[in-house]
Image 1 (cartoon, rainbow, N blue to C red):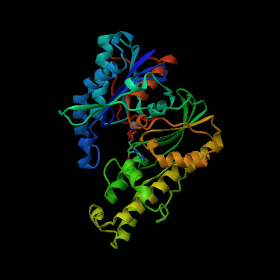
Image 2: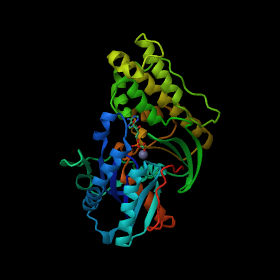
Image 3: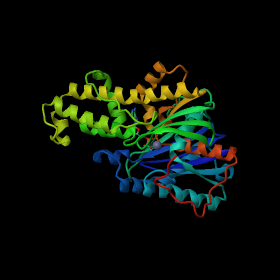
Length: 374
Ligand code: KG4
Ligand code: ZN
């Protein structure tokens, strides 16, 4: 069974073909990230315009790399929320049109839940040829094709499954009893952890997206240089990162000898490289420790058979290191290329909808849901 997955919730335009929910036949990702960097974050209009430009070539490339034509596609899966309205519309309207003209069932996928399905991808059809990441560098300019290697888990996770979903928009601990049967144990009350990485990077003058920038600099700093707070929440599995972000701002103002009304935009030009590295390392340690503290607590209470991490922050080496050190269970991680937004996780989630006989969406009426929750 082959599903074409389409993902356009933010600044990535992605399509992939997945077989039987586990075999990656292609995975194509175009990103408007280069166009967003000067603004220090995603500008929705720029993202939506790039989606319009990339969507058709990306889908064609995903089918080509998978050596799949419409006859051998059993269904389409598309992200319908949560995400940016304009970006979501491009993916959903494209998927609806393709489903209608090729007469294929269409499956509506929740982006946040789909991140978990990156963990179910355990095989690549032909690594050297078929696992391309196709990146369009600039709107209108030439594109380049990169064919990376994938390092995948050896087997699919088992239920009950504890999932730590951590991205630029979400921070959640979820216990899955089975596919589509889950309980939300806790979530953030304010900033998502990825958002905190992005905001802290901006405060100390590191480029967007903040997660990879902070991860790169952190080894040069002292992770215990500053005592930063961990939020105490009423819910055992709830999170909060806005206090930590403010503590980073105050710490940055203090180390450069300024008062708390000193504008944050002027901090990067005064901060010395060693101070910047110490703040990055201290923040990363505390942010990741907070995630691992609660994951360990949930592991001890619910004794799941598997623990998985999902979402952009799951790419963090520090998160993987701390989980390995502190959790008494072997955790297998998805390839970093499958942690950030991609079409393969959407296609895999679509495959499981088919396998579990879920009802397809109506291709004539499926609407976007920018504020969709778990
Ligand atoms: O899942 P994703 O690609 O998009 C959303 O759905 O939000 O996640 C993007 C987020 C960004 O906030 C980025 O800073 C964060 O994931 N991120 C990381 C790392 N790589 C990406 N955070 C920490 N460490 C990383 N290595
Ligand atoms: Zn995402």
